[in-house]
Image 1 (cartoon, helix red, strand yellow):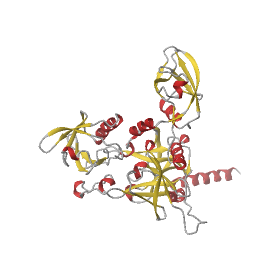
Image 2 (cartoon, rainbow, N blue to C red):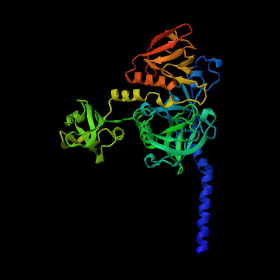
Image 3 (tube, helix red, strand yellow):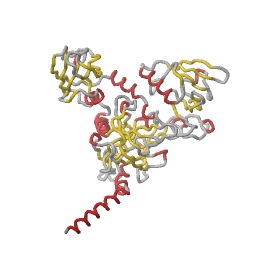
Image 4 (cartoon, rainbow, N blue to C red):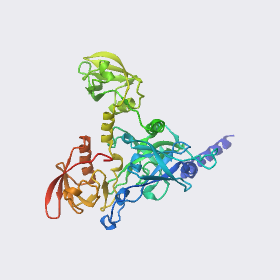
Length: 452
């Protein structure tokens, strides 16, 4: 009996080892749920020699922009990134069996950079509509650092493909508002945006959103956790928009000087909010909410934002050292607050794309230009679109951006950071210091709001 037990154990171990050598079975099962997405945008005159055939943002070339998506319902609803379909005149979805469909937009959510599309599943036989293979959402909160994952997408427009890796980190903030992302070492390239990240149980635990690479280094990818994606996509399908919870006050981490207890200090409060009407005031400290300790501000903000308007939140606060219990009614986030979130999140997920060589070309959508690094500093402008705000300022291809708002520029990220600050500050004008062919000069650039 002992020999038989040992043999079975060895066979089981051998099977598990072989199973890990190949993902073919799970890939075959999941591939039909993934789609290619292409969009037609306004055609912009682009000469090949201006960009040295380097792959840049497709909208700059006036060609089809390529991305990915996946079925979240069997009747044709697809989840993707908003930036994949942003500004599109026409959206085409190609399924894994190479069938093409024109898609309509059901809803978009700019703060999360998500969009839901729909393709027609009707056939000539009304009783037998097309059935698409939809995904199952997993729980990203239960995912652990080190877990193996599979990332699906459409890299460089080559068609649906898959790469493997692990979850390298969780709760990464990449500057896209307050949202936290899963980080992975799986290959996520241009065109993978909007594609799914699966765990080895075949569940979606993330939506591929962004990559970040530096010269001479391998890139890392970031995916929006499935819990947020599922919550947002469900609302977009149901109502076409996302209702976010709002408390009406801002907080920062701090300590109560009377008790030395830590928590969230209320730094500002809207007098029209239910929180103010319930007696909360600036300076009071939240030490617990819904029986959770007040430990992480970002967690608190995400928790309240995903609550349904009308629900109540239990708070334990300190006022001059005295402990008080409050019950606050969650309100729907006003449009002005939603716009603030959108501004802070504006186009972050497609800004961290750099290729690993000295000929990098990066597309800056807010300025509608393409640039590459100059030596010893600055960014050489290699393309200016006809609608770029730089056109009317006498700035030309070949000019070098040396400074933005008095900050020296060495990389595209330096320029993007200055743009983000200007956007956050209600789209205030951006001052550029330009080195032209014959002289250097300052130029003030008006930043157009998205879709203007």
